[in-house]
Length: 226
Ligand SMILES: Nc1ncnc2c1ncn2[C@@H]1O[C@H](COP(=O)(O)OP(=O)(O)OP(=O)(O)O)[C@@H](O)[C@H]1O
Ligand SMILES: [Mg+2]
Image (cartoon, rainbow, N blue to C red; front, side, top):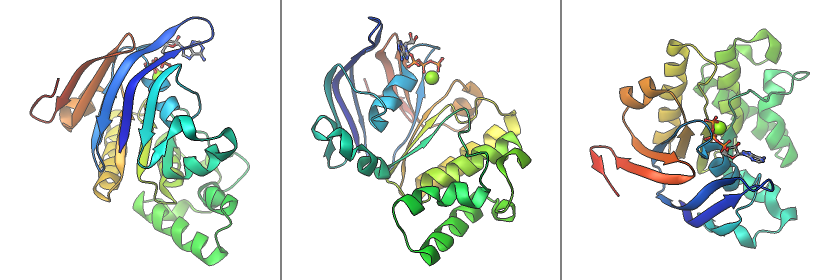
């Protein structure tokens, strides 16, 4: 569950990036976050990931009230959130396997469990045969799938995707979104910021449109909510 109550974000240069946002996303929903460049989509995802902090308002993620989480506890909170960036942030000197295993190693999972979970998510994204490849030996779409595998390897209840298809051709983009849908049906809430109208129209889901930091439209499948 993701809840934003009267959330505003003013950057230190005075830019009002989010302006009194109220959003509720239930467990297991799939939501597209759309809006023009600069409307506040990435800012919103960053606040949920605790990569930055709201200037006003409250964010509640499942049992967490984010304003009550101490900075030293943020890494533990983040175990509940998978995050996928537009620009693949894979570790270039490590294999695919190590990239995906990294978060589990940090959490001191036992090696056999790491192996099992990494294999499982690589199978899910269809790239188990690339386990021993280096990131620069993969195509852009494959790298993005590895990022998805990495984000879901510890089965977080929430997956945030910031323009996950931004650099990909239409077929590969479609592949990625099908994969996110599959992950969503495995009881993961998915929020996907996107400019890709072909996908939003081709695979209808709830759409939250933001403009100038405000919610302009919140459209459930088949009708408006607000
Ligand atoms: N660190 C920052 N400091 C100051 N202003 C920022 C910062 N990050 C973003 N902004 C500004 O906040 C506004 C919202 O930015 P944001 O990145 O959230 O937009 P976006 O909807 O993700 O855009 P895009 O579709 O281009 O990715 C923009 O005007 C941007 O210039
Ligand atoms: Mg953005």
